[in-house]
Image (cartoon, rainbow, N blue to C red; front, side, top):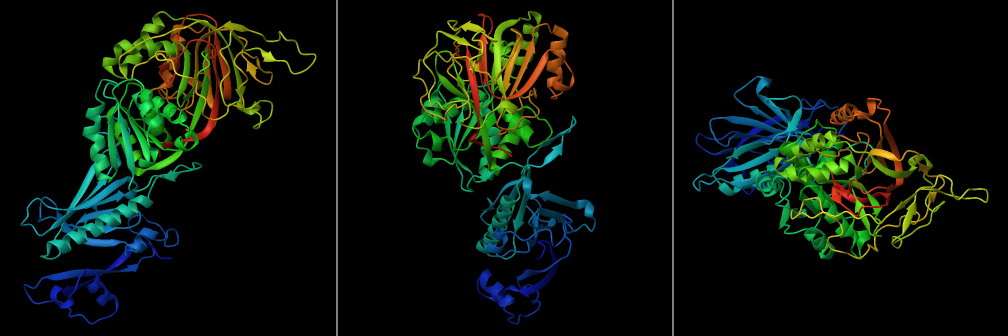
Length: 619
């Protein structure tokens, strides 16, 4: 096994003595055809570089037995890497030596003998490379540009964030423009091939890969957040897609449920991925549109991607968090998610099937909230113009008039979840609208009392809201839709009007400040609500805060949540459980109920997780 980093041996030959094209000349050298060493003054010459494998890579320090050359290098005839000398794209007097290995692109000024001017770019940070002619038609040289997004320290604050770096070189080996362009393209192709093989992967995560010639439907909600989604697209995402040679079709949504209707009827064979540049609400539409198709089992396998363009951007923050990178916000988060998109790694995504009191079933990828969190989400809508700060403003307002919400909660802990088919029945569709529902434990024997742990809740309460913004919190009953008859079976859930099975846990308390069920790590860009969550861990992270907590204590919890430290505080009112199913029954008309930030029918609700049934572009 040889290492990709070679020892350089250079030979110089007169260009005219070799004859033929580049491939012919290479064959002559490789076959041992005698060549005239050197050339007469003024005659164009070509510098050929041969390589002898080295025992240790001076760039990455890897042992010869640690890495084998990748198949892409063998296919392109550059099994041991590439070396070349080129001029700066803007200053022909500055020359660089450029070395490509399987793991890095190393650049150094030729005039310098010190390693201080050596720059090593990791190919895991490379999104693409292209070759092209210059704007000056009289220039016989060609160019190639490589695009990197390495994590670098911020100028004014701690931590790191991805920053764009372009490395451009001028190729002028001979006086023939076409030959120079072919050489530039050879380098560009080799860099692209090498970067595809270098991707950061997390241990224990099963990945698939988007095709290199990826076709993306990119849906943008121009009204999301502060109305800057299109500006973000043209300023950051479109250039990155161009650099990575990703083809896309831009769709600007025009009204609520536009994306939902579109993906429900679209010919998905035309697309390799569906990408959303908006808040979490637009992805909610896309996911539910896919699961309303007749071919939902195949459709839900279509990879989806998220680019933050809204106020909360919880899934985007979660995707970035899963890469184990430093926390980022705003445009830095956008750049991080854009980078993950063009790298094209796809992992599994859990979805949660949610049954509403109206007998409708919807699917969630993020959260279900009732009480304090849901009220802040709804009431802060009026502060949308300040962006993500709306949640801070809403939190302070709601803290000033803290409420206690009456209801009952029951859940199925992960540890008590039966195997498929044990103790529950499969059910493809939700039940008919119930007149009442119960969190009581279902009796399983002749000595069981029918009133044990019983509690009942009327479901006649309705709560609606309207908003013209496509990304706004909206009611699910604005336009009545038929119940979702498609999607995976909910084998863990009884009918909503029936008591929960006796192996479920029924919470004794009936007074809550909030109930929050999380499928991802982040509740918003700056709230790490479930630090132990991953996109495909197969469970719901259930939090609830019991009545009796003081305002200062609640505020401390949310401040600690910014760094995911709220569970370490030891607050006696906070309870955290990993569950696979749960049921919530509000008993009063106060408060709102939200799913993925979207307001839904108020009343009894139950949900079950379906592990890994969707696909998410992540890292």
